Length: 243
Image (cartoon, rainbow, N blue to C red):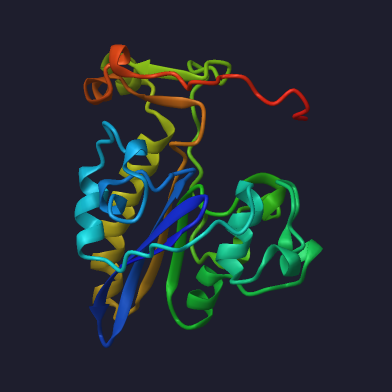
């Protein structure tokens, strides 16, 4: 079910096996609630041209929270808050390098809780904030299997604010979320077979990096967003006193 909307969106899907449920948790970075399923509860002018059919279909079968808010206006603190079920004032995580186990306390995380209750756990992509914000190892104590963090080839440059990547390029040099998706599908298939046979439940957390900048995506998706139809903000300037 769709249970959480923060700076990230987390989707929990479950299937019952041997009286308990297997869990697939999907986390999407910087996804705004600009989905047609929110049209009834938000201003309609921000939805023009949004193409989100899969999330819309999922929302129809899910618990859709209409009044969920980000804990903190930064990725790391919000992820730490979500995954430990504690406010930033308790985790003491206020910046990206802050690691909640050092700043706030040795709190039990969501995947760690499942692990300690007999589940096999694995994380892929961006679940905790990578680097110092998760102890440098994506909070290894939370996972039964080694965390999967894809290695992106150097053909892409983070200096470009956005990039529509031709099929010939991302076929040879897969985009980061392509690798996360393919590996997560393999893991889901393997876990579903292996751990069902062993009568063991699993918790699989899959974290996608986009739409966090830079906006690098397969070129084919431009057909949904023709550049000539994209409007610029009426006021593109930042406030004079902004840091």
